[in-house]
Amino acid sequence: MKSFLLSTLLPELDLRDEAAFARANPHPWLLREPTAWHPTNPDSPQTLHMPATVAAPLEGSALAIGLEPVLRDATQITLGRSPSCDLVIEEGTVSQLHLVFRQAGDGWTVEDPGSTNGSWLDGVRLEKAVQRKLAEGARLQTAQVLFTFASSTGLWRRLEAEALRH
Image (cartoon, rainbow, N blue to C red; front, top):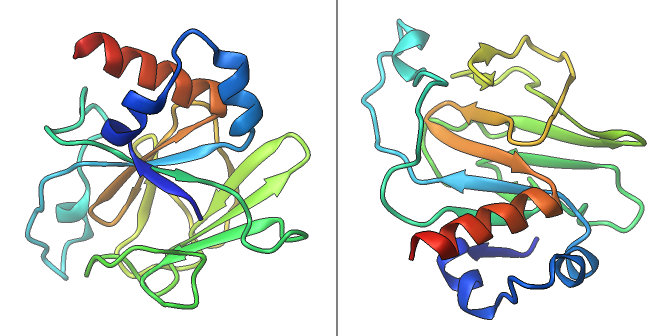
């Protein structure tokens, strides 16, 4: 999977040509947002949950991960700590297999197959083995790791906003 820090993408980006960016990157993106670590209490899964009302990520650059299936004919991407996952997140609160992303004709879905510390989509805990549709800008939390789902256009707009801030 290709991934870039947003800060490294900015100098290479021609912000005048959104169409060229979309042609080069037609897939959606998962942005791993910088977050603070919070101690966990195994008896209370609520201690892992950061409110979805977090307005802006902490200082630091998000990691932009292209959601492209590893195998050409694959329609899903797995995320977890296991080396067998398509997207490996080396963070202790993330389960071996924490999330499954599926590509459907009308977009992408996400499913928590039964992680230990849970997952949230826009502040609502995901039920085990229930697929939920991902919308532009959806906030995903896997245990203590925060992600934002973005289309190619959504990522381009985020990069444009970052460029204006600098």
